Amino acid sequence: MEKAKQDPEFFEKQLYWTPDHPPYDFFIRYHNWQLGLLVEFFKEVFEEKAFLHGYQPSNKYYRVILPKTKHDEIINCINDFELLPIRDLLFEVIAIAQDNYVEHIAFWERPEMQKLVTSAEKETQKAIQIIEKLDEKPGCVVTQEQSHHPSCCISILHSMMALLRLSTIGWPKSSSTISNGTIMTCSIRIGGLI
Image 1 (cartoon, rainbow, N blue to C red):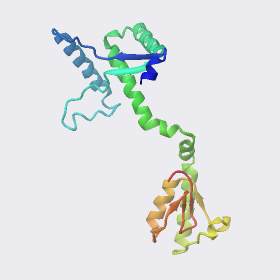
Image 2 (tube, one colour):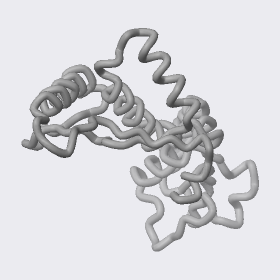
Image 3 (tube, rainbow, N blue to C red):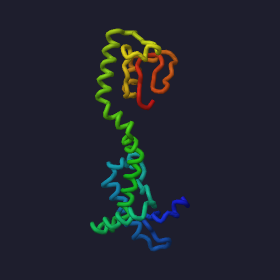
Image 4 (cartoon, rainbow, N blue to C red):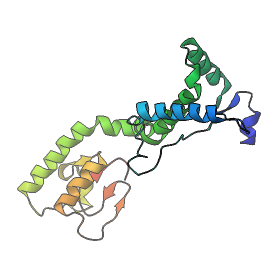
């Protein structure tokens, strides 16, 4: 943190400032008003569950750290649209949105996850082929030695779909291991992350 503070672009903004000594009733009402706006307009967006769990919602962030140029851009936008009374609320909404992005969305924007998403339809067709083959020949298992031959192996890149199908037909029955995306007791090669 100390190293980051040395950067000329480092900017730390305190949100919902309140004086140390009374009278601070105005600030309490003002900050509660902003919290009310956050809950009223963003509870579904940010999945606020405080009321469901039986407690009062509160602000998540009281301090944000961002590059000075970004802070200046945001403040200029706030001033242009005359949103200064809810400035701290806007900074908190941006911080919550960034946190949600990092926690829930960024993972799916990686190239390997994009491939997984875009290949789902093709992988579904492969899973249907496997189901049809297994329905035609119940109990047929190709050994690991045979699995490298294209004639006796179906490769599935969508790992969750392959594992779902394998679990429904009872594979693996022994104490097989999953290693490097391959289930060792059968011929179905699974790509992706396992």
